[in-house]
Image 1 (cartoon, each protein chain N blue to C red):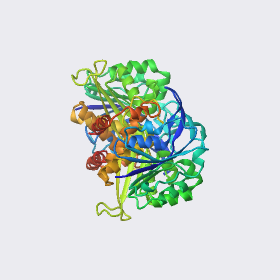
Image 2 (cartoon, helix red, strand yellow; image 1 turned 90 degrees about the vertical axis):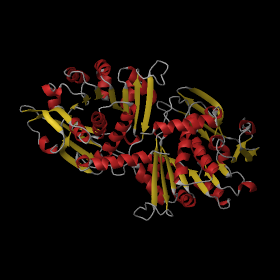
Image 3 (cartoon, one colour; image 1 turned 135 degrees about the vertical axis):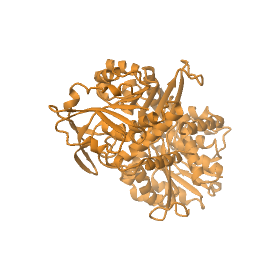
Image 4 (tube, rainbow over the protein chains, first blue to last red; image 1 turned 180 degrees about the vertical axis):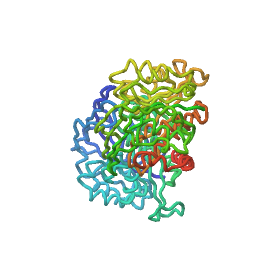
Length: 314
Length: 314
């Protein structure tokens, strides 16, 4: 089933204890698409400036990534980000950021993208996420990412967005902030009340939690008449972690790619999608930029998924 | 099979966002024994002073906890600890500590305890843990806890202890400190090289990792000729968390109690023991002091174990 991603293409400079990667390819739409393409064709929507040194056609060669939505703006500059990671590398320190093309109008949605059924709105201002979403005809399953900046400064817009989407994917700090609640399970339940029936909380090296609520299911209804289900999964216990950049977007790519590939969003499929997201992210962090992802295969991903399944079994 | 615990009995004062529990019963041996007694008889070794307001015979009434090793010192004072938890309650802030009886000679080992096969040396100075251990005849499986204080100040003693035990149970901060390594999987492997074939890393609300190495197994030997296996388990997704005090010792109690009850330490049994430890700790944190543990039943524990098994399945 068709899968659309709207997000950034970045020129990244990343420093980790394992080295420096200068002016390398990054951006949410890039990581997402590379990860999702193992499972489903992807429609790519994003903009670059005239300075972009990367040939995305070449980078996605052989992958089922439709680049008709890649907009080249001759008078603009590409988004740039420089960040560093220290110690356990749980969080990036932003050294500088130049929004450039991201501060302009969002890219034009190609007519043939408008029937997309699965949609991922990568992190940007919620008002822009809403504008992008409103151009689509009846998507089936819309997921979005967000960040502390919008929770703190654009909460009203974010709440509007939450009413329009099926799934919010966010990290534990953001979840606690948005729900104003320390306990992550309770936080997920509170976020669900704001709109998204599926809440995915990413905990980095500690895995993820998925909270699913379906008012329609007759089974195990909660006090409020809703049926809520939980799935908890540790991260894949990776020992080679060189660069965590893109882990979250790769997770989202594996997750959404699997759902779109299956054209299903039931609980069993959502759980497997979280596991695929986890595994795909473990390849991303094993090397700098896109290298960890591009050098793996669906076969490797499936093998690691089986390994993860065994690792949690008791 | 016989299970011995050596540890503290404490008069605790605990503040959490959910209230204050003044001069309540605490201590590693107490939490451990209550947790382990769901699975196995326990031999209790510890000392109290004349000021101890708790009747441990009454507290453990109906539980298979042998209190012959409880030493009452008429001229001493009981160990006291006051701590508080804030926000997500991941870490206790010690408000004050009075070692009292814990700063004296360790308690006398009753003759009939010396044939104990399963042993848990709760956190204390490693030199004392060694002294206690050396009084035993051929235990089968010895686990110990430790803390940052001993890693920083008594590392030589701790390394001696590690050569003598089968299992080290520690939290993620301690594991990183002891191994001088950020990656927890690599840290576990490094700690295993110091002695214990089983390393259990507790990550609080993020679950635990168990690293098992058996030189004797013919299967899947690593580069160094050892057979290493990993198990990762999220915490039970508790929404009622009132007081995390004793969670670690309850985890150890559930873990060791299950092993002793089964009289086995193979990988499958170790994994189930970690799951039982996880579940028992989730009852401990649901209320202040021992209340969460004492009001539950083996039936409730088994039911939550099955729930946890389902929660991680995909």
